[in-house]
Length: 362
Image 1: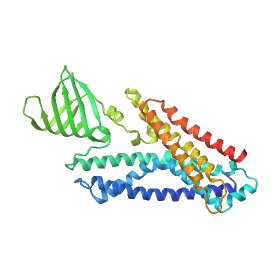
Image 2: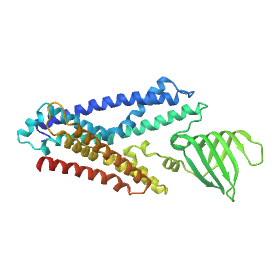
Image 3: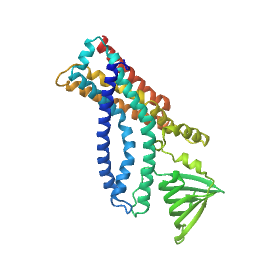
Image 4: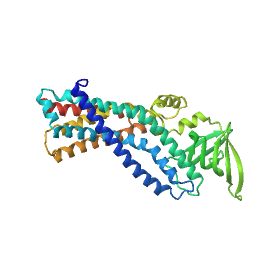
């Protein structure tokens, strides 16, 4: 059916609808995120309007990829309802073509959009998110504002018998440059013997190089230094893996990141969950398309039943919430990542197919 003239027509209608939806959503995301960016960062010294426009443009793929499952539901419902209102599905059924035949072009379109999201949108989104975080960090570094980033790195290290904890408000260069740093040094009794506050900390060969340092020792007057060194045995590769956020890692790099993380003994549940989540995206969109079909195939010349459409929207929303919730369980290690991601998708696909079987074949 997919390769017939009618199948190609349905497929083309689905893809056209999807393109218009994605263009519209990208426009809405740009306007909303630019307004939010301006509200949050207009007070920073490094903020400029052209920079904010570039910042927002780089974030669009990251936000868009989170809306793809819900968008696929609305795309499927819109395309099927439009065909119904123009009697095209009525004629198709009258010709003896079953729902399983004419729904395949829509399922194929959803599957291809899932592949597009996994192989193209995600790598671009990961790059854009990394660059936008780096841009935000540079704005904050050049400003006196003290707002913190969403992800705060804390690193504990023991080197040459010295136990210390390093914290920062943000980082650059995959964690080898920390910004707005505080270092706590402990003695053998786990008591703080020195606190160092610095503007930046850069990982060199065997030590952290602190700049613009304020040292505080118990019972002594604080001392300000231009630079200071803190010995470390941490490697650059270890920091890159330990500070990697799943959303900033492209699909093509996830497998390597997981292997390297395991070699360092780091927890990789979040990366594994992200990997399986992206891998299951095409099938999730097919499940959304089946759900859209269950509420859109009933013929109505002027308007579909509001309750039926609302039921489809609620069903798709519930599925999306469940996948996000279970994904959080997988990232935390409460549920194996493979089970957390794939079980809801398989259940939703089977449920949608079962409802269509009941509606169309009794």
